[in-house]
Length: 435
Image (cartoon, rainbow, N blue to C red; front, side, top):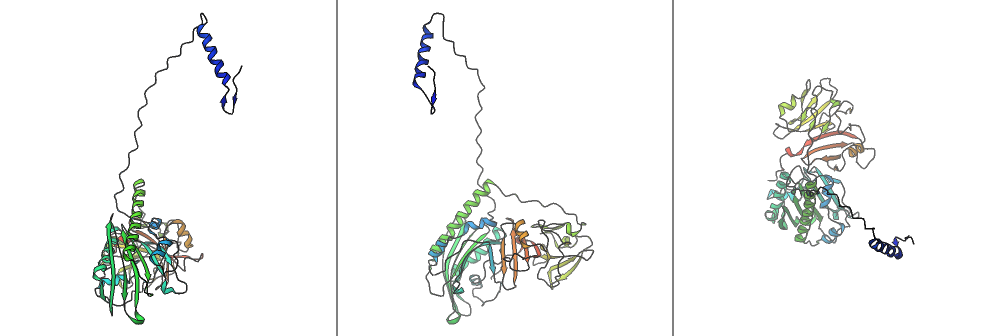
């Protein structure tokens, strides 16, 4: 009888036959069972060393690019906060600034923050818009704003939070109120919400606001309320606070696994043609952002400096062969190099740029399609400034270094071209003063 296998199982007869044969061998004279071989001794295996769990990231809490998406409210959450608002869209990578700088004088002055664009001096953004096509005055949005550092964002939030008490009643060419409540600070996240009511008659203005801040991010949710709609300010403050806590937790987990490591730029040859230099978030060729004024003006052999714009904060450098220029931007006190622009800067004396003789930026030159910049520096922000009809694509580092590509038209146009590039250390600019 032979054993066969069917469907992965042995036939029972084979097992029985094996047992009978073993018994016969055991009783036959002179037929002893073959002794089992003694197992060969093997070296004992050393216990595996467990992978140590890294300590949670405890460095600066700096969000950048797509990480801002984590703060976004859902359309359902927007609808619950503002039942009379139009439906919200999904988060996008655009920022609209009007930058008109107008408006009445406020007393206390800090109350001006309640109508000033929170995005001023931001270096990156994500937006959740809700647009009423029939009544634009009923359109609102959530702006998620990246600032140059934790300190810059914290200083702005200090001023914003002060409006909760100081602007309960204020004057702005007429009496106004801000009925607001602050949420308890949790995990370093601060938040508040309230309704601004000012003016009367045709000049009346009423709007609901909610703010939250953590790390280098400030979140601003805003909805006009001229219809007299009610607003649960405490609920709104808690919602944006808790969403910010979730975003913080996700970033800490990410940076624990992959701690940030700032890049060290390579030294450039000061005597090389300017076209061989690179514009980076830390400088241009031998020009390093943050260097003293006198060092910046002497950094390029043969270049001449020309005062520009009627201010000591702007200097135009002209190359020794007179073929190209760079605009240097110094801090308000004129002592430190804060930014450099190649090409159009919207400053008196701008000339039509020749990208072939100017530094490149990530291999992209002035005159190239804006889409090339987006491909080279993904996860940036598309910025439109209405008052000056300017269009930019802005890319920033965690450390506040910023590269701003200027376009000749709206970035939604596939034919948009790069006309200028500015690199900037935004952390060198002082906080806005509202007092």
